Image (cartoon, rainbow, N blue to C red; front, side, top):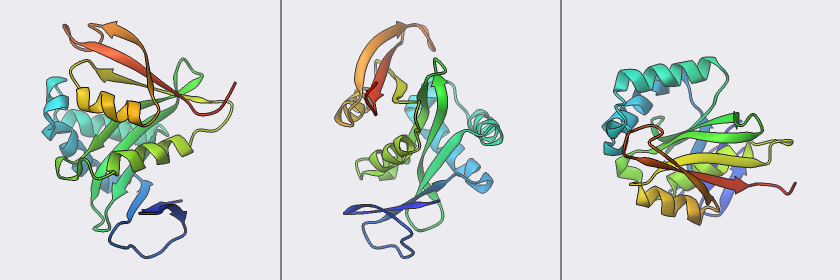
Length: 176
């Protein structure tokens, strides 16, 4: 099911878009090339060596293996952002946000917030936490996640790239 986000919040079943609305829907096969380009064109992801081909292959594998992949669609049919979440990807107990990507032209417009909220809404008991990693050099993302209720729980030095620490973030969605 798709969720429409309007200025007043999420509404299921809304069939028309308004100026301030955005559709969050499942990623489709024909979205992969656009999403892969979003990844590969961002300096952050370039630092990790992601090319359009590598990003597309990872998204295809995730789609084939029942990954939760949601896109933000501004009404044009073309994704302007996406989130990839593994429902039991952290310690086999918690959800894990693998990628949250927003087109450079859409940043600071609430797209990431809507994608994150839609992914979190998919978390079902007994899963009650969402984890993610954020690079030490990505201050904008750190501030974003902290505003959304995530708390830094630790640091993994040299985990993905030598010389870069990954901060572990966690958000508790429901009490133990």
